[in-house]
Length: 279
Image (spheres, rainbow, N blue to C red):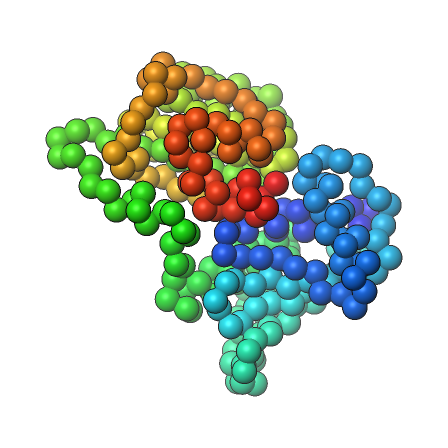
């Protein structure tokens, strides 16, 4: 039971990472690193899991070009029987004062998560990684995104917008019907990736896209993240989009294929979706 919950939390954490963030197992034996990695990948693809891995999970979460990172250890009994995970600050040439400052931040943020279902995920993904990005002057835009966002929109023309959201999963028939209904009512085109993880993409007029995103956020989700809501520079709208077609897909590869048909695959690849960052 504890092992299955650990795997679910690790998959959730991995799927939440952006393209400049990485989770890596740090264990003494290469076989154990491979076992944990294969287990997480198998779970991401919905495959059958082994009953256990021979050693507890120890892993790091890093941001590219930032000299501080976090090392996390899951005891075998975590999260059962009040067993807590361990988290330590690591870094290149980090002073004891700086290390203690970050440990204090961890302790403060951790105290706010006493009722969390996935405390390690929430602490790292929703608190610590954003703190690190802010500390080091914000996030560098993923490769390929700057050029797409710099293009000016013509004055006087209602801009086409698009939005991308991800969640731990999307399985509820009610949610899937609601997405279909809202996309039709708002004349939006897009698709939803069902299963684990969940992903929603839509495009249309600015007001309609923003209303759609608001409706989605008002529903109950596990780890919903709005990846972007922004204008489509020099948008070329296909006939499929103009008709407001809504699709469902089941695999991350199909997400990339659909975005490639629209000439927008860089928007998902730059976030690590379909390129090893999210499965």
